[in-house]
Length: 89
Image 1: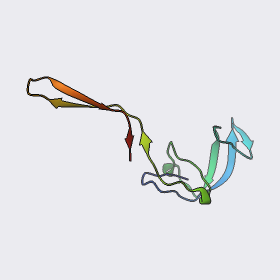
Image 2: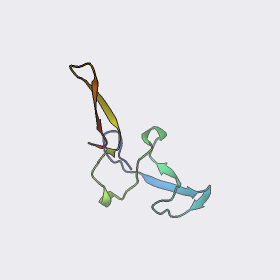
Image 3: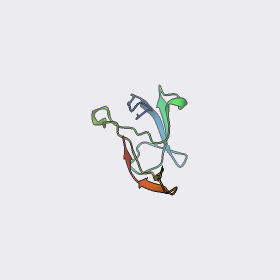
Image 4: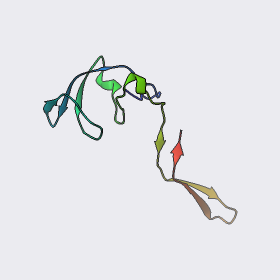
């Protein structure tokens, strides 16, 4: 399960899966489900985390789309603006 705030993944096991408050045995990509996890505290889980197999562990990558506005003072007293739309880390 991960990535955490440091970009790391941690092992966990699933006790049960629920979809629309009904117990199910499997879940597919794109479905919204609730998971009961073993050896995992609520504080360790945050929005945007994923569950992957140990052999399929992806490298940590963060990408977001933002609009940054930077103002630069010009000699004539008018501020010039520069915008950027994609940030990767």
